[in-house]
Image (cartoon, rainbow, N blue to C red; front, side, top):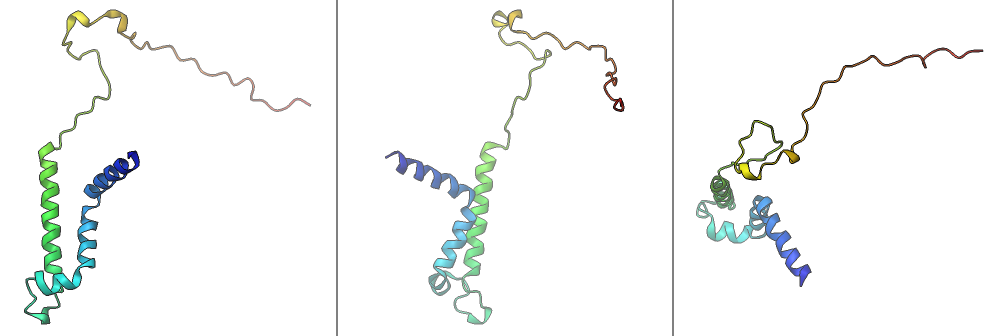
Length: 122
């Protein structure tokens, strides 16, 4: 049962990512039906459309659907990468000094010792 659920979830997630490929594969598999029944230019065989107009229409609809789905999220994903001391405290009663990290102190830098770098003594 778990395998079935995991495969169906994997397929559902991959469908969103590869939906243009699925539209194109559906066109290639049903090219004869699309060119004879669904094509706008089926009455004019000299154009050699072969259902490409239908494929373009389906790809545009798929792109608009993806744009609408992305627009629903608003393309606003906020990620908090770090906390600084300047951030406002929402709950002052829960704010404790015990949880604060000490501020970084600047230490005096001393040059490294290069005494070990010398030619071998014979």
